[in-house]
Every structure is written in C-alpha cells, then in structure tokens.
Length: 237
Ligand code: HEM
Image (cartoon, rainbow, N blue to C red; front, side):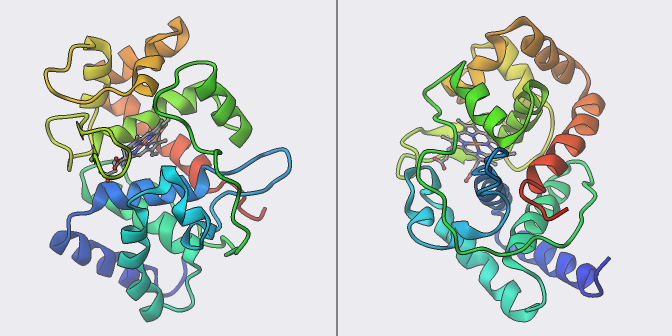
C-alpha cells in the first residue's frame, strides 16, 4: 500500500458523496484500459485518454468531465500516476455504490501515446464484434459477461452515445439486477443495448447471465477477478 492510499480513497469517497458520478468514473477507467491490444502491447490503463485526440473519440463522449473531476486529486496527490488515479477512482466508486471490494495495486505508468479510434466496442453490434474487441484485449468470454454487469450502474445519454436511459431501476447501486433484465429481455422502459442482448446469443454466455441473475455473490466474486484483469491491462509486470 502506498502511504497516501487511505487519504486518497477517503477524499474520493467524500467527493462521490457530494457529486454522485460513480458510473462516469467507472466508465472512464474502462475506456482508458479497454484500448489495450495484447499482441502489440499498445493502449491499456495508461491515462492516455486524458489527451486529444483520444478524449475526443466518439466512444469517449462525456468523459472529459470525469477527467476534470479527477484533476484536483492529482494536484493534491502528485505522486499518484493518472493511470492509477483513474483505476482507483473506479474501484472506490464501485465499493461506494455497494459493490465488491476490489484489491488494488499501484504502479501503472502514464503515457501520452493515444490509440487510434475504434478500439472500444460498438453498442450496436453483437457477436462476433464483442469477442473481437475483448479477445484483442486478451480477455475471455467470461470477462465479457462479467464486466458487462457494470451496466448495473449509470445510464446512456442522448448527447453522448445517442442512447437514452438506465439499465436498472437503481443506477447508483452496484448489484445483479442488470442480469435479471438481460434474461427477461422485456425491461419496461429500461435500456438494453444490442451488446447487452448479445450476452444471450451463445448458450455458454447465457448460462453465466442466468447464474449471475440468480446469485449476486457469484457475480461479485467473478467481477473482482475480471475487473482486476481489466484495470491492469498494460500494467508493467
Ligand atoms: C460490452 C461492451 C460495451 C459496450 C458496447 C458499452 C457501451 C456503453 C454505452 C453506449 C454507454 C452509454 C454512454 C452514455 O451515453 O453516457 C455506456 C455506459 C456505461 N458503461 Fe458501457 N459498454 C460496454 C462495456 C462496459 C464495461 C466493460 C464497463 C465497465 C467495466 C462499462 C461501464 C459503463 C458504465 C458504468 C456506464 C454508465 C456511464 C454513465 O452513467 O455516465 N461498460 N456503455
């Protein structure tokens, strides 16, 4: 543990109690890490998202706000890398929203090397697109299902992605409702993107959706593992 970790976590928690932007911080961390290419080792959790042109990529619409929210924390704790700060803010947000406690390692290195546009998944596509994107990161089918569960938090916005609405009835609570809605299909006014529906396209993936819909403990346990993998993409070994 680095010496400022406790104080930094407390400051982020206090901020979240004043500005409940948990979902936005989780999305920032995912979009920073999710550019990773495990073959050429480019992209990943390196905070390149804070620079143009990456922050201006269509998929990152709205995330400049999250970058700006976290800037004062970097000013107060200059020893933390932006890459660690973005990932830490996400795990603190998940915990503060009632989700699992995710073990955290410091050591990510900041980079100015923005990746090209088009590395993040397209919400209008199903398989094989989702697999292509997650496999490129070095992640698995199980990771696709587990990490999609982060859509229990937050909402889509007309002025960002063009989609509108929340996936669950309690978008500031991290729980397994998302999977119940994916299985039920008819979500009565709640959002389901094609990429969410795609989880039921393959029997093995659908089985996991059912497991997580029925057993929140199983979801949390697997979420911890997959989230660590995501948050450490490109992490120096
Ligand atoms: C599987 C492929 C995925 C696709 C296609 C996708 C797509 C989207 C889209 C279109 C939005 C709406 C953005 C907006 O209009 O504000 C969104 C929001 C969100 N996504 Fe995903 N996403 C995916 C996976 C993930 C993963 C892996 C995570 C985290 C581990 C995640 C976390 C979030 C969160 C928390 C929000 C809500 C943000 C807010 O309320 O401001 N998503 N996603």
